[in-house]
Image (tube, rainbow, N blue to C red):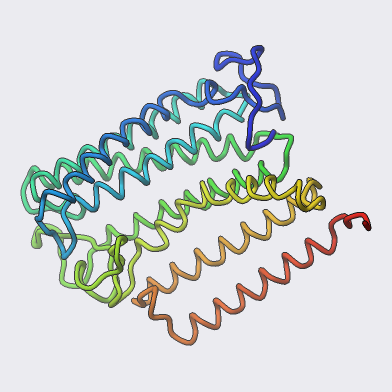
Length: 329
């Protein structure tokens, strides 16, 4: 198995690859997930147009910024999962259903988020009217189903025996970290200080220590005044793309650096990167929960970041030293 699958006429979506074999190109990818990713393209276009022509603002951010960001994130998530599950040769019916739940859930989420933006309403934590409450509850139930379906795919992917170990562990670690990142969203449902179900119109928040809205980073909107759970949420979710991209990068560098052609060395480097990614995820989650803005770390946060950096460098150096030596020229 490798990140670049070679097409083969003998393998079709109805006849999955044997254990350890590469699937037959993009035609073997999960079709409902591909369709969900395709739906996100016009959703992103509509949101981009909205950013240009609609000057409404909600919580100090352009009202179409949230659906634009979510559509891009869902597109990347569904597209990556569609590719990953093509490497799972067994339990194809379960894979199909779990992937379909993820794809359908993603479409439901983006439809509600975009619809609420068009109405000028909050999509998250909104209990102001019966309609707002119903839509948010639908989103909440959909997210739970989406997370459980992704967990099912993660278990199947972890159990699959794949030929290229570096690629296999990049996908396994990526999907586990993505699950952890997605689960951070459940922390946002907790009532913030001063909020009470049935009394206030808004119950839940992504900011810690400060109200939602207020000063934020460009593009992302992450709070620059307090903690923001969207930071670890985003960072964890996109391990799904970044760790496999590392394997792709190592493969591209292999012709230039012969040592990277060794499967064992690539595996060690991927495991070091996955460990570092998990440590940074834990650090920025801890930072957010302490009400600390990402760009305003205290001494404790900086010290922890320094330890992670040192451990990562030591791990990478140990991996390189234990790998095969390049022949002398």
